[in-house]
Image (cartoon, rainbow, N blue to C red; front, side):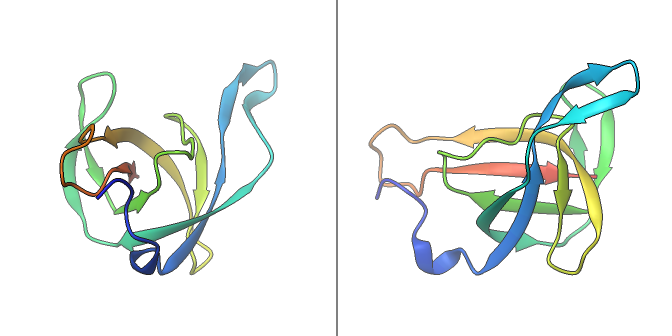
Length: 105
């Protein structure tokens, strides 16, 4: 198995990639619709800077998408949230479903 199977990608999340800060606040790229599997469960995760934070949702998508830390994500119910971390789960040829795990505030 190389990529997460398409039949698992039942949800759609809109991601606006974080581009950095400007004089007027954060800058985001154009919105991209991402097919994914969305798990809306609260859990404790570690942010990129090492802090422990509470994640309200996690989505799993194909490895070819990008969701840098700080990106804005809009869930199917319309709730806007922020990416805490995007973790590559790549088995490099092992029999695992390769995917990107995106943890959200």
